Image (tube, rainbow, N blue to C red; front, side, top):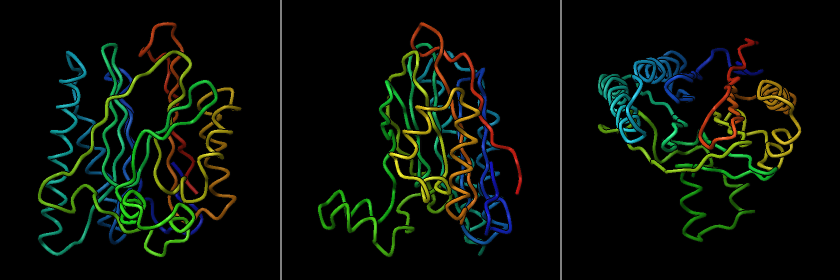
Length: 245
């Protein structure tokens, strides 16, 4: 997790519960204090997710905790402090895997050297792109690319998207905030994940490149590698870029 070169405060948060099978990032929105508090509320809520009997129970527990965080953040908004946070979560157990997200924090999978984006940004520009109103080239220049259509704490109930995914030995997964993807293309991310010898090295290289290209926002990256011969078995998650500015 890196504060970046321009932001005076860290508004990103992360949580890693490898024994539970949970890896997540959150990116605060709003004024500096409330944005940081919003992302912290999400991380604190996810930190209480218990080990679950199966992927369904784990998913339900995460949705419940995100609902609690949403209610707390929304209460601050109702009282006048406009706040919110994006979130992206990777869940993995022996019986299945899911990604859960709201906003434009992302989850990627590198398999066989090929990168796939496993989440879809909840943003105005992405909605226009999906409807065919604008082209991909126009989307890259669109002036309102930061307008989100979903985030935790911006509505009375949490608006989440959930997707089932498959995980196999050799996969490398990346969970990150938009401070990374603002500066790096998917091709950049693919090259770095494919070339890195270890997840920590991948995180370092990704964050260093984001900073070299301007570091306009906080940057958080979690890399998780599936190493065991059995699918869905995670041998390690070297997750945190902890150096502060």
